[in-house]
View 1 (cartoon, rainbow, N blue to C red):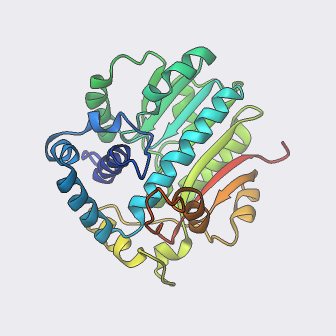
View 2 (cartoon, one colour; view 1 turned 180 degrees about the vertical axis):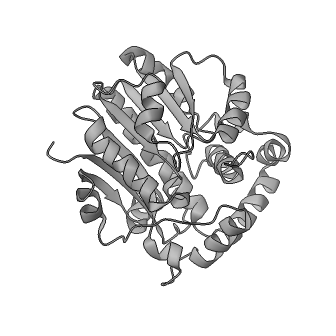
Length: 291
């Protein structure tokens, strides 16, 4: 287990903060900037410098900046809708520098909902240190765990998770870096260890992003960049077999967004950003089979 917090999680927070600064992106994460330090905060406050750094980001991982914006919008939509529909628990797996527990504090309080943030110890310790800037969050429980080693069910049970309560599970930017066994374990837990009406929303790499077997917009650069940061891509799903992949693990697809869907929903407005979403990411909302 690494004693170093995730730098890709910090870069994702920087991207969300930049999205929130840009009217064309309309990014919803207005708190991410408060979790940043040093040069990142300076860059965000100076528009020409911010734009220059964004161009560097986009050269290193073409289309990923757009994908991260789409992901923020979609995951926020799911949380908002699930809380309104009666979810009483929000589990954030690989929480990184997520701010949703604070941004959705109002709806969570009205619904009596509890947030569980699950992450590797080093990253979570750094997040908790920075999150003190956002104020108290008594509805949040922090669970330090390595999902490659500890079953999710055990970690949640020890942290006070209620298996009888309707739950929404967020798995954002995590499956890319796990092994297949760890991915399977989480999905099977959702299918058999959560209450009726529970859902999971997660993003995934196309299988070819791991193997490099077929080209896609931004793939070559993206693979090289994450490998250079010490966090190479390790897991992907055949994008033509998502329904079957989920069914084999006791889940059913409620929504599945491919790059072209993200492009159409968030980057085709005449008054918005017109960049191209990376061609090797997908997002899925899944529920328990039979419901």
